[in-house]
Image (cartoon, rainbow, N blue to C red):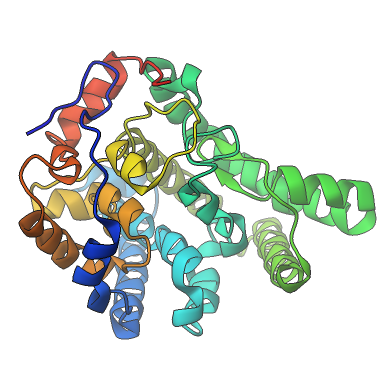
Length: 352
């Protein structure tokens, strides 16, 4: 089996037989709506029960039930937040799901789906790993500094998102120059905050504006509720702490999402697989740290049209079909913990 070198890249030059593998997993491309709906509603239910168990916050954290409740809220909302990724890939195959997700998760967490609608840029052969890829760590952040940055921004991003929708949104409604800046510079979920993207086309603009207005309205209602004494400040602090925990988990997932060995050159599917990880391991750990199939991130870059619930079966078929020396076998990570430690300890050198 091939192994990763000091840069974190996987050796081997052979291209994967994409067309042949695609035929092998073609029947796995159709999402099952009932799986998505039950999973999302289950996540929200777990999070709501957790909020009740951990209230009043933080007093209840001194009791086991309160700690369990806080963990349930974080785990439920962390998993639920990742449906934004599935919506970006297959919203047309799941009618109504994007609306429900926005109402239940996206708007309350201030991460509506339009902020992630440019995710496919990350899968583009031309843009993967380049400066235009908002989901790939820049060279100076590939190592200890990146880990520190991901931890630090977890405490700041709730305020960044709040500012985006409470202040910049109404300013953009009034001033066309602000509107253009907000659309281009503060309407994409980058790894360390809001980042640059293409402005919306005519077909997208209405969805952007409606979701933006909904987030503004949500924040206005929360502030009014606090002012009138209807929403306790304790609950706001509780949700802030939950959001920080979610972002910290998200930061850990980012560190093991890629090997970050790209110099920004065009990358075909084989190169994207080579730069990614597939992890096996305890199922509960995968479900908590890398929800919705993110533990098979190399597989996702190979076939992004496979929904998360079919990814384990696709992974099994591809492993069995390819020889042991293939690139796909070589991208299996040692373990999530081991690769996290490796990310922190070893700055990545670029592959030209």
